[in-house]
Length: 145
Image 1 (cartoon, rainbow, N blue to C red):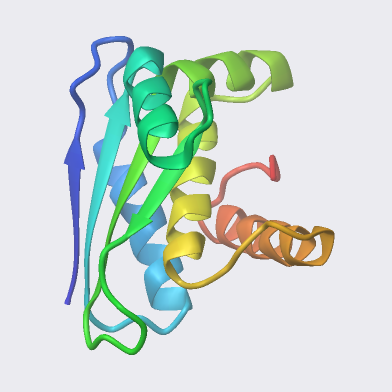
Image 2: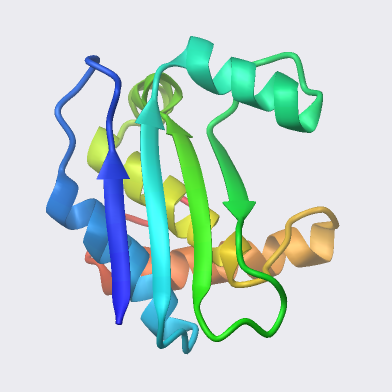
C-alpha cells in the first residue's frame, strides 16, 4: 500500500491535493514501489530557506528538498518531501504554465530522489529529466521538465 500525506502550513495558495497525491503515487508505482509512506510538506520561502540552510548548508530558498527515511533495501519506502509554494508560483509565472503543473513537477522530482535517482552529474540529471517528462505525460500535464 502506498500512503501519501500532505501538510500545508502555508497560506499563499490553495493546493490541488488529489493531483499532488496522484503525481506521487504515479511515480512510486511506476518505479515498482509496492509499499510506501510519503509525506509532502508545502511551505513558504522562509521555511524552506531555513531547512535548506540547516540540513544542506545552502543559505537560500530552494524548490524541493527530499529526505529519505528508509534505508537501502527496506521493505517500505519512507520519506519526506518539502516543497516551496512561493518558488512554484514564481517559476510557473516565468515559464508560462500553471502552478499545479509546477507543483506536480516538484512532487515527481522528489519522489524520483526517494527512488534513488540523482541529479548531481549531467548524465544523471538528463536521466531524471526523461523520467520527469514521462510522469508529467502520464498525468496529462505539459512537458515543463
